[in-house]
Length: 203
Image (tube, rainbow, N blue to C red):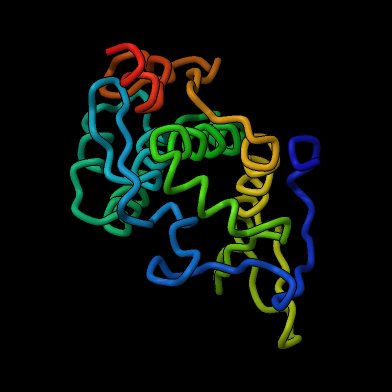
């Protein structure tokens, strides 16, 4: 299971996998860059999971977080993040998988109908993010027309989430904050995230 080992490279057969790359593709909604999956964290709207992930790299710098989240596009937000890499959390490499898992669960929790249906459509196939450059979060061509190789960490997190919630038919109603030091947004401790359905039931 991926929680035990996400560091090894794997080979995926393209024709037997759900492969996504661009947000306008059939499974483009699986991408962190995809529009239409807004997030609500500590009374703040974050347009997509890419912006949230990049912002959490700079937990101790609310000004950088604001600069990232206020952008009009996730790609621009990612470029802003790269500009400030020297101010990343010192433990970022140790926690980034946990942070990405949290971001994806927030995306699922707050966009359940749309995102759960997309994950359900992947069946039990391997989910792979195709990338020509990034073999950590994604996978790239292996010299064979029908193969991709990489750690595919994002795809494996999506498969983990699919198994835990979609295949088990267990609706995600709450996402707790990570138990790490300085898990902050705009200088405030991040609170538990709840789905829209919980708000509807309470009101």
